[in-house]
Amino acid sequence: MGLVGRSQHEDAAPVLNELVRLLQSRGAEILLEQRLAELLPVAGLSACALEDIGEKADLVIVVGGDGSLLGAARTLARSDVAVLGVNRGRLGFLTDINPDDVHAQVGAVLDGEFTHEKRFLLDAKVMRDGAVVGRADALNDVVVNSGTSAQMIELELYIDDTFVYRQRADGLIVSTPTGSTAYSLSGGGPIMHPALDAVVLVPMFPHALSSRPIVVDGNSEIRIDVLSRNRIHPPVTCDGQVNMTARPGDSVVIRKKPEKLTLLHPVGHSFYASCRDKLRWSNALTN
Image (cartoon, rainbow, N blue to C red; front, side, top):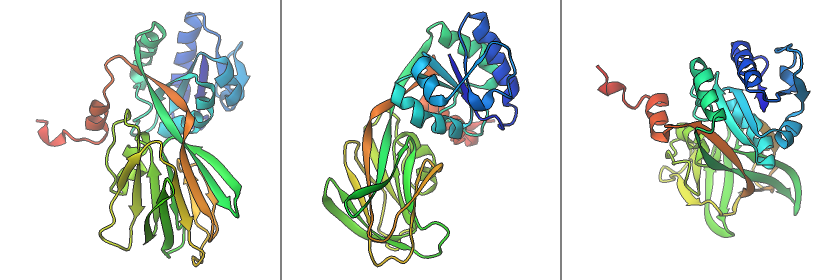
């Protein structure tokens, strides 16, 4: 079993210690992410790089917020290892186990009582003169934006080599269904069920008031051309964590990755219940 998280995350240590005791009581071998080694000075734990944990473990438990899981997912998806999230963050759409229920809910998962789903990731490439100059993965979204500049950028969008539009905007969000409740939602994009095989493109403060989000087939190739007349070098951000920089004349090419993340949930987990809870849909109905 792998244990992954952020060592500086507030109140992570008590949850991690409880997980260690639970896993040890089950006779499981624990592989601890290297950066957690100082936080958990427990004898007999093996500290490993995240890549090694993905290759060796049957299950990886991520303790933290959705950002912690996003960071781990881009590596763990390559190994096809199952991932379970324990929430020590805020919203927790991906890390859905409450820390107060760790013993019962993680114990149930270890007993085989869980549901699972596959979440696809995006592969983003920055192309310059026909060569790849940057590449990264995203579970939530790929964002081409104007960065700290107050200027708009001018982009052309192509889907499967078909011209869609030319647009001046602060940028463009390309989101998976997983990311539809994240940055895309704040930009006015739709909430998408995680099981959908689709991608949504959300313009950021477009100059044209008629510009709206577009939902396309998940197998589409999306190309964003940064027109040569732009004067800024737009950042290309994956999950808000990995940054590349494009230049005027570059293209950003985005496709679904073949590898998927296997995400486990406790029995009874519901995406709609998560939305009601995290987005407070039912507040007006409570007494």
